Structure formats: C-alpha cells, structure tokens
Image (cartoon, rainbow, N blue to C red; front, side, top):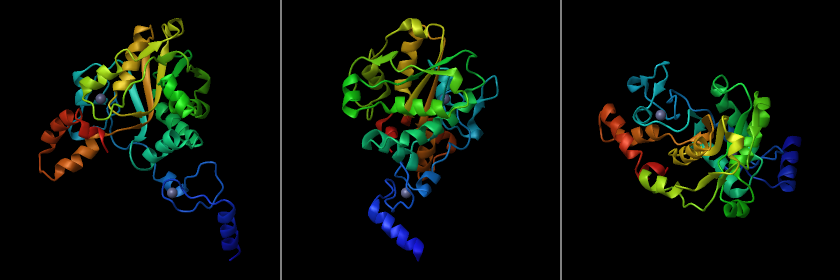
Length: 287
Ligand SMILES: [Zn+2]
Ligand SMILES: [Zn+2]
C-alpha cells in the first residue's frame, strides 16, 4: 500500500513514460526507457561474416584462411576496411533507442549505445595496432549538424571510449574527416546510386594526422556499408594504414529475407543466392 502511494505520488511528480513501450517508469533515470525494453536488446547471435558482420548461415558458410566464415559478398568484392563489427541487429528496441537519440534528442541514450559499441569492439582488441588508434565518427554535413545540434556518431564514440577497456589506446578525432556537402538519404537507392550519392562527399582535413595510422570509424548503424566504405576509401587515400569499422547496430538482411522466402518454399540455397541480389534492392533497405 505504502509502495503504491509512493509510486502514484512519484508518477504525479515525474509523469514520465517509457519512450519505447509507453508504460509508466517507476524509477528515476536519465534515460526514459524501462528495464524491460532495455532487456530485450542483445548482441547479434549466431555466425557473422568475419569481414562485414553480415549474418551467415553455418551450413553455407565458407571460411577464410583463418577459419572465419565469410559472406558471399565479401568473397566477391574487396572491402576498403579491414573489418566491420556491430553490437546488435538494427530492429526492435535497439532501433528505437537509436531513434530516440537521433530524432528525439534523448541524449542519455548515447551512454547505453556507447557501452554496446565498446562491447562490439572487443573482438578487434587483439588486431588493432599497439600504438594509439584514431577514432573517427562518420561526420554529418555542417548544416545538418547545426540543425540537429549534435552528431550521434560522435556522442556514441565518446561514450564508447569511456566504457572501453582500451580507452588509453583510443584517441577521438572528430575534426579530421569532414562531410563536404549535403547528401540525400540512401533509402530506396540502388547500390550504384548510393555510391554516386556519396562520391566526393567526404574529405580528410588533416591528412598528416592519419598517415600510417590505424583508424576506427564509428557510426550508429551499418545498413548497406556504402557510407563507411566511402569514408574508409577517403581515409585510406589520405594515408591511413588500416580502417576498422564499428557500429552499434547492423541491418541483417539474411535473417529477414529468409522468413519472407520461406512462404514461397524456395530451397535455402536459392534463397541464399537470391538474397544477395535482393540485398541491393530498395525493399531490402526497408524494415
Ligand atoms: Zn518500455
Ligand atoms: Zn561479408
């Protein structure tokens, strides 16, 4: 009874609901998301491509020289980055949390997302160079940054560094990579259009600072990889030794496409091949 009174008093004084499920929050927290919603967010499960992080089906996974599974796309094309890691799949609570930060200015979400990114970085620890690694957030165009008031990739990178066991080996550098012009949304574009859309959109302001360095490129979401690939190319051209990519979330095309194809009773092998093509279509970008 006493607890209920306190709770109802609390909800009068702090009339806040979980911004994901809408249920009233019972504890004071800077992040207006309930523990249940946060509890649904977890790391990607199962095997993922050792290069791009796409989910791979073990039955069809081939392995590289070191025995890591690679996806068919990474077997066909050479990525301009060494490896891309992501914490979770870009759906459900994680997608909502990223949207809260990006579009609803719920800045405390950056702390949670940063801790997730720090966890995603663990598999890279051994591979990164022994010296200081430059951490570069994917930049926004200055007009957009001004409008939004912050760059979510930068907030997440900052929080991740604070949470990482390797914080002493990372050096955040937000002013080295610039987005030199406005680019339109990548949604609905073909892979060719996406590359055109981003061509020449990024530049390195202080090339001397990246020469010979290991760079960790940070973004909130890896969707098709076009943005981080273009940034990686620009950084490599400016002299970066190696570029690694870390995002909080990643669109997992294979998982969702399988569910859709199951109804058509296509063989897993057909579905797998088909997915590679479908991954390039606008439908695969919508969730
Ligand atoms: Zn909730
Ligand atoms: Zn791959």
